[in-house]
Amino acid sequence: MMNQEKNDSIQCSIHNCVHHAENVDYCTLDRIHVGTHELNPTKKECTDCDSFQCKM
Ligand code: SF4
Image (tube, rainbow, N blue to C red):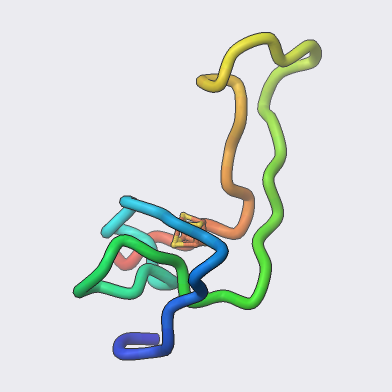
């Protein structure tokens, strides 16, 4: 997944994700899914990138 082209529409600083562009803070996916782990999300901390995949 490394060295793929960044998606200018999706900024991201999660370097632990296999979809991160590595040298710049962007995602390489065409699109992502954002979801929540809460029943009633009220803060940004309630949101998740469901497309995240850990490198390790
Ligand atoms: S999939 Fe989500 S967490 Fe992973 S690089 Fe893209 S935006 Fe960031």
